[in-house]
Amino acid sequence: MSIYAVSMVVYFMIAFCIAIFYSRKRTTSNEDFFLGGRQFGIVFVFFTMMATFLGAGTTVGTTAWIWKRGLSQVWMTAGYAIVFLFIGFFLAARVRRFGTNCNAYTFADFLEIRYNKSARYIGATLMWFAFMSIAAFQYIGIGRIINTVTGIDYTASVLVAALITILYTSYGGMWAIAITGVVKGALVFTGIVIMAPILYMKAGGMQNILNSIPAQHCSVVGYITPGQALTWFLVFFLGIIPMQDWWQRVLSAKGEREARMGMLYLAGGFVLVELLIYVIGFAGKVLEPNIANPENLFPTLVMHYFSPYIGGLLLAAVIAIITSTASACLLVASTHFTRDLYNGIIKPNATDAELLKFSKISTLGLGVLVLVFVFAAPGMFELFVISADILGASLTIPILAGFFVPRVGAKAGFYSILAGIAGWAISYMGWQPMGFGPATVGAFFSLIAILIGMVVLPPAERAVLEKVGYDSATVKIAK
Image (tube, rainbow, N blue to C red; front, top):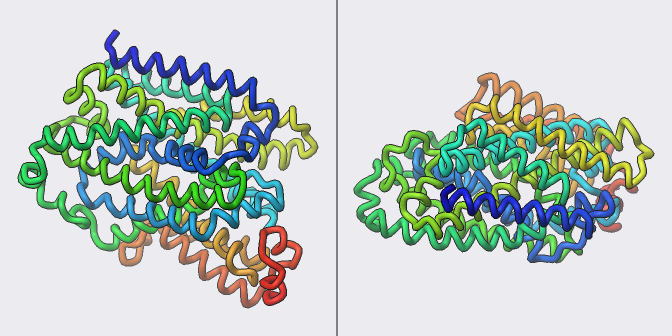
Protein backbone atom coordinates (compact mmCIF):
# COMPACT_ATOMS: atom_id res chain seq x y z
CA MET A 1 0.00 0.00 0.00
CA SER A 2 1.41 3.43 -0.99
CA ILE A 3 2.09 6.23 1.47
CA TYR A 4 -0.79 8.16 -0.14
CA ALA A 5 -3.25 5.37 0.57
CA VAL A 6 -1.90 4.92 4.12
CA SER A 7 -2.34 8.65 4.82
CA MET A 8 -5.96 8.55 3.67
CA VAL A 9 -6.78 5.43 5.69
CA VAL A 10 -5.27 6.98 8.83
CA TYR A 11 -7.31 10.14 8.29
CA PHE A 12 -10.55 8.18 7.83
CA MET A 13 -9.95 6.30 11.08
CA ILE A 14 -9.24 9.49 13.02
CA ALA A 15 -12.30 11.28 11.58
CA PHE A 16 -14.60 8.40 12.47
CA CYS A 17 -13.24 8.27 16.04
CA ILE A 18 -13.89 11.99 16.41
CA ALA A 19 -17.46 11.52 15.15
CA ILE A 20 -18.14 8.76 17.68
CA PHE A 21 -16.58 10.80 20.52
CA TYR A 22 -18.61 13.94 19.84
CA SER A 23 -21.76 11.98 19.19
CA ARG A 24 -21.56 10.66 22.74
CA LYS A 25 -20.19 13.75 24.47
CA ARG A 26 -21.94 16.77 22.93
CA THR A 27 -24.75 15.56 20.70
CA THR A 28 -27.54 14.88 23.15
CA SER A 29 -30.33 16.89 21.50
CA ASN A 30 -31.58 17.73 18.03
CA GLU A 31 -30.27 21.30 18.44
CA ASP A 32 -26.81 19.89 19.24
CA PHE A 33 -26.92 17.66 16.16
CA PHE A 34 -27.92 20.41 13.72
CA LEU A 35 -26.64 23.64 15.32
CA GLY A 36 -23.96 22.64 17.81
CA GLY A 37 -26.05 24.01 20.67
CA ARG A 38 -25.73 27.54 19.19
CA GLN A 39 -22.32 27.94 20.82
CA PHE A 40 -19.98 28.76 17.90
CA GLY A 41 -17.55 31.64 18.26
CA ILE A 42 -15.94 33.59 15.40
CA VAL A 43 -13.20 30.99 14.86
CA PHE A 44 -15.70 28.13 14.57
CA VAL A 45 -18.01 30.06 12.23
CA PHE A 46 -15.05 31.02 10.03
CA PHE A 47 -13.34 27.64 9.88
CA THR A 48 -16.48 25.54 9.48
CA MET A 49 -17.52 27.77 6.57
CA MET A 50 -13.98 27.75 5.18
CA ALA A 51 -13.95 23.96 5.43
CA THR A 52 -17.23 23.86 3.48
CA PHE A 53 -16.01 26.13 0.68
CA LEU A 54 -12.59 24.47 0.48
CA GLY A 55 -14.22 21.26 -0.64
CA ALA A 56 -14.22 19.53 -4.01
CA GLY A 57 -15.31 22.73 -5.75
CA THR A 58 -12.19 24.65 -4.76
CA THR A 59 -9.58 21.89 -4.92
CA VAL A 60 -10.57 19.29 -7.52
CA GLY A 61 -13.16 21.42 -9.32
CA THR A 62 -11.62 24.89 -9.61
CA THR A 63 -8.17 23.63 -10.58
CA ALA A 64 -9.80 21.59 -13.37
CA TRP A 65 -11.90 24.53 -14.52
CA ILE A 66 -8.90 26.88 -14.57
CA TRP A 67 -6.95 24.26 -16.55
CA LYS A 68 -9.77 24.31 -19.13
CA ARG A 69 -10.93 27.95 -19.04
CA GLY A 70 -8.20 30.06 -17.42
CA LEU A 71 -9.25 33.47 -16.12
CA SER A 72 -12.77 33.04 -17.46
CA GLN A 73 -13.39 31.23 -14.17
CA VAL A 74 -12.86 34.47 -12.23
CA TRP A 75 -16.55 35.39 -12.56
CA MET A 76 -17.55 32.54 -10.28
CA THR A 77 -14.88 33.54 -7.77
CA ALA A 78 -16.05 37.17 -7.83
CA GLY A 79 -19.65 36.10 -7.23
CA TYR A 80 -18.61 34.13 -4.16
CA ALA A 81 -16.33 36.80 -2.70
CA ILE A 82 -18.82 39.66 -3.06
CA VAL A 83 -21.75 37.69 -1.71
CA PHE A 84 -19.71 36.70 1.38
CA LEU A 85 -19.02 40.38 2.03
CA PHE A 86 -22.69 41.22 1.49
CA ILE A 87 -23.78 38.50 3.92
CA GLY A 88 -21.23 39.61 6.51
CA PHE A 89 -22.17 43.29 6.37
CA PHE A 90 -25.92 43.09 5.85
CA LEU A 91 -27.43 39.64 6.45
CA ALA A 92 -25.57 37.59 9.07
CA ALA A 93 -26.65 39.62 12.10
CA ARG A 94 -30.26 39.73 10.88
CA VAL A 95 -30.35 35.96 10.38
CA ARG A 96 -28.86 35.35 13.83
CA ARG A 97 -31.41 37.74 15.41
CA PHE A 98 -34.21 35.92 13.64
CA GLY A 99 -32.84 32.61 14.96
CA THR A 100 -32.93 33.95 18.52
CA ASN A 101 -36.45 35.36 18.20
CA CYS A 102 -37.97 32.26 16.62
CA ASN A 103 -35.70 29.37 17.71
CA ALA A 104 -35.06 28.79 14.01
CA TYR A 105 -32.94 26.03 12.49
CA THR A 106 -33.24 26.71 8.77
CA PHE A 107 -33.96 29.32 6.13
CA ALA A 108 -37.26 27.44 5.59
CA ASP A 109 -38.28 28.50 9.10
CA PHE A 110 -37.84 32.07 7.88
CA LEU A 111 -39.99 31.46 4.80
CA GLU A 112 -42.82 30.06 6.92
CA ILE A 113 -42.78 32.81 9.52
CA ARG A 114 -42.31 35.66 7.05
CA TYR A 115 -44.65 34.25 4.38
CA ASN A 116 -46.52 30.94 4.80
CA LYS A 117 -46.19 27.15 5.15
CA SER A 118 -46.39 26.61 1.39
CA ALA A 119 -43.36 28.88 0.91
CA ARG A 120 -41.55 26.80 3.51
CA TYR A 121 -42.22 23.46 1.85
CA ILE A 122 -41.33 24.69 -1.64
CA GLY A 123 -38.12 26.32 -0.37
CA ALA A 124 -37.13 23.28 1.67
CA THR A 125 -37.68 20.96 -1.31
CA LEU A 126 -35.49 23.15 -3.54
CA MET A 127 -32.80 23.32 -0.86
CA TRP A 128 -32.93 19.59 -0.31
CA PHE A 129 -32.37 19.01 -4.04
CA ALA A 130 -29.54 21.56 -4.19
CA PHE A 131 -27.61 20.11 -1.26
CA MET A 132 -28.06 16.54 -2.38
CA SER A 133 -26.48 17.74 -5.65
CA ILE A 134 -23.63 19.50 -3.86
CA ALA A 135 -23.03 16.45 -1.64
CA ALA A 136 -22.83 14.38 -4.85
CA PHE A 137 -20.27 16.88 -6.12
CA GLN A 138 -18.11 16.11 -3.07
CA TYR A 139 -18.48 12.33 -3.52
CA ILE A 140 -17.20 12.81 -7.09
CA GLY A 141 -14.20 14.81 -5.81
CA ILE A 142 -13.23 12.22 -3.21
CA GLY A 143 -13.77 9.44 -5.73
CA ARG A 144 -11.46 11.15 -8.24
CA ILE A 145 -8.68 11.42 -5.66
CA ILE A 146 -9.01 7.81 -4.45
CA ASN A 147 -9.11 6.59 -8.06
CA THR A 148 -6.03 8.62 -9.05
CA VAL A 149 -3.99 7.68 -5.97
CA THR A 150 -4.84 4.00 -5.60
CA GLY A 151 -5.97 2.94 -9.06
CA ILE A 152 -9.19 1.56 -7.57
CA ASP A 153 -12.08 1.65 -10.04
CA TYR A 154 -13.82 5.07 -10.03
CA THR A 155 -17.24 3.62 -9.13
CA ALA A 156 -15.76 1.72 -6.20
CA SER A 157 -13.91 4.89 -5.13
CA VAL A 158 -17.16 6.85 -5.05
CA LEU A 159 -18.81 4.13 -2.96
CA VAL A 160 -15.93 4.35 -0.47
CA ALA A 161 -16.38 8.14 -0.35
CA ALA A 162 -20.10 7.69 0.32
CA LEU A 163 -19.52 5.20 3.14
CA ILE A 164 -17.02 7.48 4.89
CA THR A 165 -19.27 10.55 4.62
CA ILE A 166 -22.43 8.77 5.74
CA LEU A 167 -20.90 7.19 8.83
CA TYR A 168 -19.04 10.35 9.82
CA THR A 169 -22.07 12.63 9.50
CA SER A 170 -24.76 10.35 10.92
CA TYR A 171 -22.71 9.76 14.06
CA GLY A 172 -21.25 13.17 14.83
CA GLY A 173 -23.55 15.86 13.41
CA MET A 174 -22.57 19.53 13.59
CA TRP A 175 -20.11 19.19 16.49
CA ALA A 176 -18.02 16.61 14.62
CA ILE A 177 -18.01 18.85 11.53
CA ALA A 178 -17.12 21.92 13.60
CA ILE A 179 -14.30 20.45 15.68
CA THR A 180 -12.61 18.75 12.74
CA GLY A 181 -13.38 21.73 10.47
CA VAL A 182 -11.01 23.96 12.41
CA VAL A 183 -8.18 21.45 12.04
CA LYS A 184 -9.02 20.58 8.42
CA GLY A 185 -9.34 24.20 7.36
CA ALA A 186 -5.93 25.01 8.82
CA LEU A 187 -4.32 21.93 7.24
CA VAL A 188 -5.67 22.54 3.74
CA PHE A 189 -4.91 26.25 3.88
CA THR A 190 -1.32 25.41 4.85
CA GLY A 191 -1.13 22.76 2.13
CA ILE A 192 -2.32 25.16 -0.59
CA VAL A 193 0.11 27.83 0.63
CA ILE A 194 2.93 25.27 0.25
CA MET A 195 1.75 23.87 -3.11
CA ALA A 196 1.19 27.12 -5.01
CA PRO A 197 4.73 28.62 -4.93
CA ILE A 198 6.43 25.25 -5.47
CA LEU A 199 4.32 24.44 -8.54
CA TYR A 200 4.74 28.01 -9.78
CA MET A 201 8.52 27.59 -9.72
CA LYS A 202 8.40 24.10 -11.26
CA ALA A 203 6.31 25.55 -14.11
CA GLY A 204 9.10 28.06 -14.84
CA GLY A 205 7.64 31.21 -13.30
CA MET A 206 5.30 33.79 -14.76
CA GLN A 207 7.02 34.29 -18.12
CA ASN A 208 7.18 30.58 -18.95
CA ILE A 209 3.58 30.04 -17.87
CA LEU A 210 2.38 32.90 -20.10
CA ASN A 211 4.42 31.57 -23.02
CA SER A 212 3.11 28.02 -22.58
CA ILE A 213 -0.64 28.52 -22.17
CA PRO A 214 -3.21 29.56 -24.80
CA ALA A 215 -3.76 33.33 -25.09
CA GLN A 216 -7.44 32.80 -24.27
CA HIS A 217 -6.43 31.60 -20.80
CA CYS A 218 -5.30 35.13 -19.91
CA SER A 219 -8.63 36.80 -20.73
CA VAL A 220 -11.60 37.02 -18.34
CA VAL A 221 -13.86 36.34 -21.34
CA GLY A 222 -11.45 34.06 -23.20
CA TYR A 223 -13.85 31.13 -23.40
CA ILE A 224 -17.20 32.77 -22.73
CA THR A 225 -19.25 35.75 -23.89
CA PRO A 226 -19.76 38.87 -21.70
CA GLY A 227 -23.35 37.74 -21.16
CA GLN A 228 -22.18 34.35 -19.92
CA ALA A 229 -19.64 36.06 -17.67
CA LEU A 230 -22.30 38.18 -15.99
CA THR A 231 -24.56 35.15 -15.73
CA TRP A 232 -21.85 33.15 -13.95
CA PHE A 233 -21.32 36.01 -11.52
CA LEU A 234 -25.04 36.30 -10.81
CA VAL A 235 -25.52 32.54 -10.49
CA PHE A 236 -23.12 32.41 -7.56
CA PHE A 237 -24.06 35.76 -6.04
CA LEU A 238 -27.79 35.02 -6.13
CA GLY A 239 -27.42 31.29 -5.50
CA ILE A 240 -25.39 31.58 -2.29
CA ILE A 241 -27.82 33.87 -0.41
CA PRO A 242 -30.47 31.17 0.23
CA MET A 243 -27.96 28.36 0.84
CA GLN A 244 -28.58 26.64 4.14
CA ASP A 245 -24.90 25.93 4.92
CA TRP A 246 -24.06 29.52 5.86
CA TRP A 247 -27.49 29.98 7.51
CA GLN A 248 -26.73 26.92 9.64
CA ARG A 249 -23.34 28.30 10.73
CA VAL A 250 -24.77 31.75 11.47
CA LEU A 251 -27.66 30.24 13.45
CA SER A 252 -25.05 28.17 15.32
CA ALA A 253 -23.13 31.30 16.39
CA LYS A 254 -23.18 32.55 19.98
CA GLY A 255 -24.44 35.97 18.91
CA GLU A 256 -24.78 38.50 16.13
CA ARG A 257 -21.18 39.72 16.34
CA GLU A 258 -19.78 36.20 15.99
CA ALA A 259 -22.06 35.55 13.03
CA ARG A 260 -21.12 38.78 11.26
CA MET A 261 -17.36 38.66 11.86
CA GLY A 262 -17.12 34.96 10.98
CA MET A 263 -18.61 35.65 7.55
CA LEU A 264 -16.44 38.73 6.94
CA TYR A 265 -13.30 36.76 7.77
CA LEU A 266 -14.55 34.08 5.38
CA ALA A 267 -14.63 36.59 2.51
CA GLY A 268 -10.96 37.50 3.07
CA GLY A 269 -9.84 33.90 3.53
CA PHE A 270 -11.73 32.74 0.46
CA VAL A 271 -10.12 35.36 -1.80
CA LEU A 272 -6.62 34.45 -0.60
CA VAL A 273 -7.18 30.72 -1.13
CA GLU A 274 -8.72 31.28 -4.57
CA LEU A 275 -5.68 33.32 -5.69
CA LEU A 276 -3.43 30.41 -4.72
CA ILE A 277 -5.73 27.94 -6.47
CA TYR A 278 -5.47 30.01 -9.66
CA VAL A 279 -1.65 29.74 -9.43
CA ILE A 280 -1.98 25.95 -9.05
CA GLY A 281 -4.40 25.72 -12.00
CA PHE A 282 -2.20 27.76 -14.34
CA ALA A 283 0.93 25.86 -13.28
CA GLY A 284 -0.95 22.62 -13.88
CA LYS A 285 -1.74 23.69 -17.44
CA VAL A 286 2.02 23.89 -18.07
CA LEU A 287 3.12 20.85 -16.07
CA GLU A 288 0.30 18.50 -17.14
CA PRO A 289 -0.86 19.83 -20.54
CA ASN A 290 -2.20 16.51 -21.79
CA ILE A 291 -3.98 15.14 -18.74
CA ALA A 292 -6.89 12.94 -19.85
CA ASN A 293 -9.37 14.18 -17.23
CA PRO A 294 -8.75 17.67 -15.76
CA GLU A 295 -10.74 16.66 -12.66
CA ASN A 296 -7.73 14.46 -11.79
CA LEU A 297 -5.32 17.42 -12.04
CA PHE A 298 -5.05 18.28 -8.33
CA PRO A 299 -4.11 14.78 -7.06
CA THR A 300 -1.91 14.22 -10.13
CA LEU A 301 0.12 17.36 -9.36
CA VAL A 302 0.56 16.25 -5.75
CA MET A 303 1.75 12.79 -6.76
CA HIS A 304 4.08 13.91 -9.57
CA TYR A 305 5.75 16.95 -8.02
CA PHE A 306 5.96 16.26 -4.27
CA SER A 307 7.62 13.56 -2.22
CA PRO A 308 5.32 10.70 -1.16
CA TYR A 309 5.42 11.83 2.47
CA ILE A 310 4.52 15.47 1.82
CA GLY A 311 2.11 14.44 -0.94
CA GLY A 312 0.45 11.91 1.32
CA LEU A 313 -0.18 14.57 3.96
CA LEU A 314 -1.49 17.02 1.34
CA LEU A 315 -3.91 14.50 -0.14
CA ALA A 316 -5.07 13.37 3.30
CA ALA A 317 -5.75 17.02 4.17
CA VAL A 318 -7.68 17.55 0.92
CA ILE A 319 -9.71 14.38 1.45
CA ALA A 320 -10.39 15.65 4.97
CA ILE A 321 -11.73 18.98 3.79
CA ILE A 322 -13.86 17.48 1.01
CA THR A 323 -15.32 14.99 3.48
CA SER A 324 -16.15 17.89 5.77
CA THR A 325 -17.93 19.68 2.92
CA ALA A 326 -19.82 16.53 1.97
CA SER A 327 -20.83 16.06 5.61
CA ALA A 328 -22.02 19.65 5.88
CA CYS A 329 -24.12 19.26 2.72
CA LEU A 330 -25.56 15.97 3.91
CA LEU A 331 -26.41 17.56 7.26
CA VAL A 332 -28.25 20.39 5.49
CA ALA A 333 -30.32 17.88 3.48
CA SER A 334 -31.06 15.92 6.64
CA THR A 335 -32.04 19.09 8.51
CA HIS A 336 -34.69 19.94 5.94
CA PHE A 337 -35.90 16.37 5.67
CA THR A 338 -36.28 16.11 9.45
CA ARG A 339 -37.64 19.61 10.21
CA ASP A 340 -39.82 20.16 7.17
CA LEU A 341 -41.12 16.68 6.32
CA TYR A 342 -41.00 14.51 9.43
CA ASN A 343 -41.54 17.16 12.11
CA GLY A 344 -43.57 19.49 9.88
CA ILE A 345 -45.98 17.01 8.31
CA ILE A 346 -45.62 13.41 9.47
CA LYS A 347 -45.11 13.86 13.21
CA PRO A 348 -45.53 17.48 14.41
CA ASN A 349 -45.49 16.45 18.10
CA ALA A 350 -42.32 14.37 17.99
CA THR A 351 -40.14 14.55 21.09
CA ASP A 352 -36.57 15.82 20.91
CA ALA A 353 -35.26 12.27 21.38
CA GLU A 354 -37.42 11.05 18.49
CA LEU A 355 -36.20 13.89 16.28
CA LEU A 356 -32.55 13.16 17.08
CA LYS A 357 -33.03 9.47 16.26
CA PHE A 358 -34.82 10.28 13.00
CA SER A 359 -32.14 12.86 12.12
CA LYS A 360 -29.42 10.22 12.26
CA ILE A 361 -31.48 7.67 10.31
CA SER A 362 -32.41 10.22 7.63
CA THR A 363 -28.76 11.27 7.30
CA LEU A 364 -27.87 7.64 6.66
CA GLY A 365 -30.62 7.17 4.07
CA LEU A 366 -30.00 10.45 2.26
CA GLY A 367 -26.28 9.70 2.10
CA VAL A 368 -27.10 6.57 0.10
CA LEU A 369 -29.58 8.47 -2.11
CA VAL A 370 -26.85 10.97 -3.06
CA LEU A 371 -25.27 8.19 -5.13
CA VAL A 372 -28.16 8.53 -7.60
CA PHE A 373 -27.18 12.17 -8.13
CA VAL A 374 -23.52 11.15 -8.60
CA PHE A 375 -24.11 8.70 -11.42
CA ALA A 376 -26.85 10.76 -13.11
CA ALA A 377 -24.80 14.00 -13.13
CA PRO A 378 -23.40 15.31 -16.45
CA GLY A 379 -20.26 16.61 -14.69
CA MET A 380 -18.97 18.40 -11.59
CA PHE A 381 -19.30 21.97 -12.85
CA GLU A 382 -22.75 21.37 -14.34
CA LEU A 383 -23.97 19.83 -11.08
CA PHE A 384 -22.61 22.79 -9.12
CA VAL A 385 -24.22 25.40 -11.38
CA ILE A 386 -27.64 23.71 -11.43
CA SER A 387 -27.75 23.58 -7.63
CA ALA A 388 -27.00 27.30 -7.29
CA ASP A 389 -29.12 28.20 -10.32
CA ILE A 390 -32.55 27.25 -9.06
CA LEU A 391 -31.97 28.62 -5.54
CA GLY A 392 -30.90 32.02 -6.84
CA ALA A 393 -33.78 32.14 -9.31
CA SER A 394 -36.56 31.41 -6.84
CA LEU A 395 -35.51 32.22 -3.28
CA THR A 396 -33.03 35.11 -3.18
CA ILE A 397 -35.46 37.95 -3.94
CA PRO A 398 -38.08 36.77 -1.38
CA ILE A 399 -35.39 36.35 1.30
CA LEU A 400 -33.87 39.79 0.73
CA ALA A 401 -37.30 41.42 0.55
CA GLY A 402 -38.31 39.61 3.73
CA PHE A 403 -35.42 41.13 5.66
CA PHE A 404 -35.24 44.59 4.08
CA VAL A 405 -38.70 45.53 2.73
CA PRO A 406 -41.33 45.47 5.50
CA ARG A 407 -44.12 46.33 3.04
CA VAL A 408 -43.84 42.87 1.38
CA GLY A 409 -46.65 40.65 2.64
CA ALA A 410 -47.12 36.88 2.82
CA LYS A 411 -48.84 36.48 -0.55
CA ALA A 412 -46.38 38.72 -2.39
CA GLY A 413 -43.43 36.70 -1.08
CA PHE A 414 -45.06 33.38 -1.92
CA TYR A 415 -45.99 34.39 -5.47
CA SER A 416 -42.46 35.71 -5.93
CA ILE A 417 -41.10 32.21 -5.24
CA LEU A 418 -43.50 30.67 -7.76
CA ALA A 419 -42.61 33.30 -10.37
CA GLY A 420 -38.91 32.63 -9.87
CA ILE A 421 -39.40 28.89 -10.41
CA ALA A 422 -41.44 29.57 -13.55
CA GLY A 423 -38.79 31.95 -14.93
CA TRP A 424 -36.04 29.44 -14.18
CA ALA A 425 -37.93 26.65 -15.95
CA ILE A 426 -38.68 28.79 -19.03
CA SER A 427 -35.03 29.83 -19.31
CA TYR A 428 -33.73 26.32 -18.63
CA MET A 429 -35.78 25.10 -21.60
CA GLY A 430 -33.98 27.54 -23.89
CA TRP A 431 -35.18 31.14 -23.51
CA GLN A 432 -32.04 33.08 -22.49
CA PRO A 433 -32.38 36.72 -23.60
CA MET A 434 -29.04 38.50 -24.21
CA GLY A 435 -27.25 35.40 -22.96
CA PHE A 436 -28.66 35.56 -19.44
CA GLY A 437 -29.22 32.13 -17.90
CA PRO A 438 -31.94 30.55 -15.76
CA ALA A 439 -30.80 32.07 -12.43
CA THR A 440 -30.93 35.62 -13.78
CA VAL A 441 -34.19 35.18 -15.68
CA GLY A 442 -35.85 33.50 -12.71
CA ALA A 443 -34.68 36.19 -10.31
CA PHE A 444 -36.05 38.87 -12.68
CA PHE A 445 -39.46 37.13 -12.76
CA SER A 446 -39.32 36.87 -8.96
CA LEU A 447 -38.52 40.58 -8.61
CA ILE A 448 -41.37 41.65 -10.91
CA ALA A 449 -43.82 39.47 -8.97
CA ILE A 450 -42.79 40.92 -5.62
CA LEU A 451 -42.98 44.52 -6.88
CA ILE A 452 -46.50 43.93 -8.19
CA GLY A 453 -47.43 42.12 -4.98
CA MET A 454 -46.29 45.08 -2.86
CA VAL A 455 -48.84 47.27 -4.68
CA VAL A 456 -51.89 45.02 -5.03
CA LEU A 457 -51.61 42.52 -2.15
CA PRO A 458 -51.93 42.96 1.65
CA PRO A 459 -48.80 44.06 3.56
CA ALA A 460 -47.01 42.05 6.23
CA GLU A 461 -48.55 41.83 9.70
CA ARG A 462 -46.88 43.75 12.54
CA ALA A 463 -46.32 40.61 14.63
CA VAL A 464 -44.55 38.90 11.73
CA LEU A 465 -42.18 41.82 11.21
CA GLU A 466 -41.32 41.90 14.91
CA LYS A 467 -40.55 38.17 14.91
CA VAL A 468 -38.26 38.51 11.93
CA GLY A 469 -36.30 41.25 13.73
CA TYR A 470 -37.56 44.62 12.48
CA ASP A 471 -37.35 47.35 15.10
CA SER A 472 -40.55 49.03 16.34
CA ALA A 473 -39.90 52.28 14.44
CA THR A 474 -39.63 50.44 11.11
CA VAL A 475 -42.79 48.46 11.85
CA LYS A 476 -44.75 51.70 12.54
CA ILE A 477 -43.51 53.30 9.32
CA ALA A 478 -44.38 50.18 7.32
CA LYS A 479 -47.91 50.19 8.66
